[in-house]
Image 1 (spheres, rainbow, N blue to C red):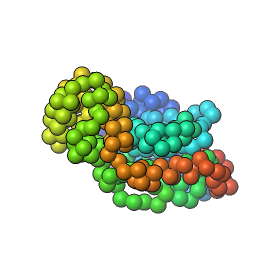
Image 2 (cartoon, rainbow, N blue to C red; image 1 turned 90 degrees about the vertical axis):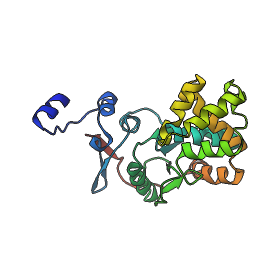
Image 3 (cartoon, rainbow, N blue to C red; image 1 turned 180 degrees about the vertical axis):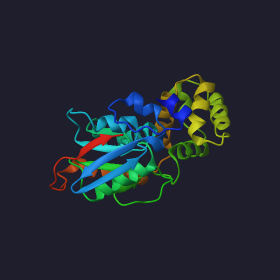
Length: 245
């Protein structure tokens, strides 16, 4: 179908329950259709993880935490692990994809449209929106963590990943020279011969423990703790019906 679109200048509209099909589509080509009372809303740019989470029938944890991507989720988990460890296993972290999706989800949270306790986080480089919480630092997570650790001389990282301090400093500083901050982890992990996810988890752990002020961390996770603390009223509507194009 993709080949025919290119050959004949066609547009194809299809519905799918397959994460593999969704992964092949650009963000702008993923449409999330949501029925909410009498309003039908269409959101572009959802992630495959978000789509599949919304289409299963499994039992969910006590709170759903919506984050832009898995890196944001790992950063939040490290904050929770330090200040409220038991909350981690009580939450499900759902990557939603584009920031525009997070803003739409925040509007739902603000209007109490979710059928279960939920909170929405945007990366720190986004503006504040109703129903949304911002990650700390005022910038993208990669920039905040790398800059914070650099200012703190990469404290704890070498011990955490089993590499020399010199290797850590050299590899991470070289990675920060690239324009696209999303690629920093990839370049640093290749130089350090460690998995990208493992390196990011280590960096987040060290930043949360040695660089992030406690009051900022607690202010960030309080939204999750409030969701877990007690019953949260939701609109008396039928469960949300969702389909994906």
